[in-house]
Image (tube, rainbow, N blue to C red):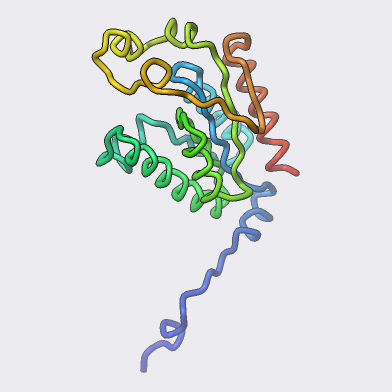
Length: 198
């Protein structure tokens, strides 16, 4: 005789609310946007470490990690860039449902890109704009991509031959040319804790 429990429709036995009550905090997606070199990944990883030290689970999604795995089949055409954002947003939505803070560090240069992420994630989406002059971002050009873009060896590079549309309604804006990385991390951490502990 088969176990009747296996014949029932699958049900969620552990809800998001249950996880939040157990962990004593909410979850959310914090979407870092800004030019390459503005400090997105540096700050996101710094915030992740601060949350870890507080016993709060968080994960960083950034371009390098995503492009080498989940979105490894995508290139840099406009449709592929949009699909890249869609996949990241969908994965982040699943993580948030399981009470994990998502720190998403992506240039996501167009309003359309960020709006798609906002639509998928809903009220858990919080945009953080790291403003930094192009000149400073180029000075920090660790990977040498700006130089290659200036030489015409990389086409469609954001800030050089492709546009970056400044967010109009970011929840938090930090000028990373005027703030140090530790200062920026603390500003974001305070913002994050204000939301997940409310």
